[in-house]
Length: 205
View 1 (cartoon, rainbow, N blue to C red):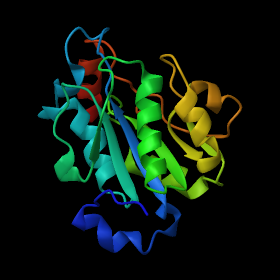
View 2: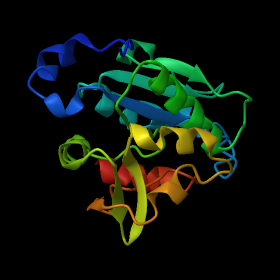
View 3: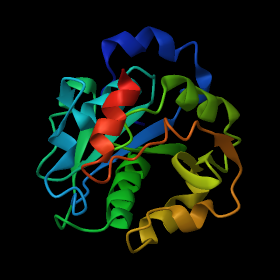
View 4: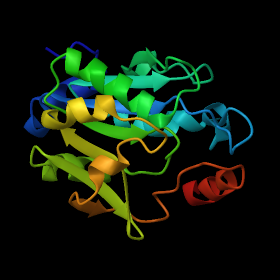
C-alpha cells in the first residue's frame, strides 16, 4: 500500500480521479547543477526557489504517493507531502536518481510512476492530468519540438529496467518509441544554464 502522505487539499479529489489510484510521483531533484554553476534548485524564480514551482504544481494532484529524490541543496518539500529519498551517492547521475525514486515507489506497492523534473518549472497541471488520463498502463511521455521527454509515466512492468539503468540520460532509452502527448516547447523549458532563468521568469509573467 502506498504510504507517502498526501496534502489535505488533495484528499477530496482523489476519490473522483480513479486514474491516480496506485500512481506514484517521482520528482527528480538531485542534479549536480554543473552547467548552472551554483545550486539551481534554490535559485529564485518568481519570488520562490526554482524547485517549488514544479513541486507545488504536482502536490495539488492526488497521487497515491510522492517521492522527491534530493541532493543537498533542495528546498524542504516535506510540507507538500513528498517523501524525501536522498541521492546516494551524492552527485550520482540522473539514472541513479530515477532508480532510487522508482525503487521507493515499488516498495510501497505502486502500479505505475509518473516521473517529473524539478528544474522544469513551467509544465502546467493540465498537461499532467492529460498524461494520467491517457496512460494505458504501459508508458507515455511528453514531447516538445520533436523531442521525447519527461514528464513521463511508466507501468510497473518497466520498474526493473528503470532501476537497472545507468548514466545521465535517465529513462530516455526506455521512452524510445513510446507514445507521447505534445507539450508547448516554451513550457517544456528545462532550467539548465543561468541564461535559462530569465527566460523562465519572462514566461511566468
